[in-house]
Image (cartoon, rainbow, N blue to C red; front, side):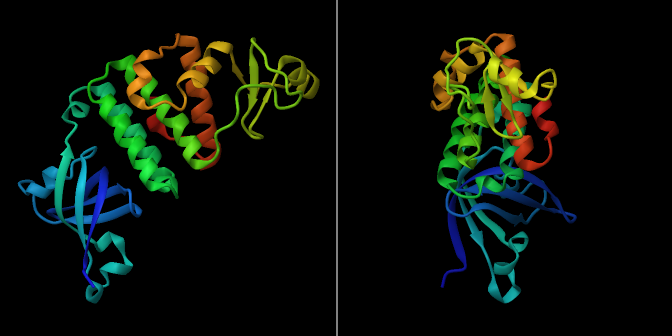
Length: 255
């Protein structure tokens, strides 16, 4: 049985390990999150190839005799055919931070825990668009990525009508993150009276953006802009949903 496996992968993180090696964490289409050691100093070709946000085909070597197969942190990255370098993500602060927020989200949710091929495609398509994006587009792409990530995780709420009375509304609705429910003004007032400070207000502009752009390919997001109020509501919604799922809020979302 071969000790080397080949994966389609995206580098999420690369950090020092020991005096001259590094530890790389990958999102793969075949096995989800994989961690492997990259041997060699700063001049190593593999060290450069395994920079964060690079993607392509990787070869991972595991030696059962040395117990590599039972501890992925001892797997070895033996080769990397980089298909996308995405150098533009490292050229501007906004791009770097947005890409890092997406990578940290993937890591914190264990690579989505299931449909890894879909997760990898969404991640790479989003990073491709971020590579040459300005600040506003980077922000919109990150919100779009987080929203679609909630769908992959199976925690995306429905935003088209009131969860209590079933009525659609062209005015504001309020989202209860703890219950995943959306309430119109009448139902919200009846249920919570004056104690509704924990609900998120979602105006029509925000909900229309999710309805129009929420499930589209990232390449189409430049066609769908948001005003500042709608963006703030959209970002508050997706980060609240993921915070509830993770049990913590990621600092990278607030760049």
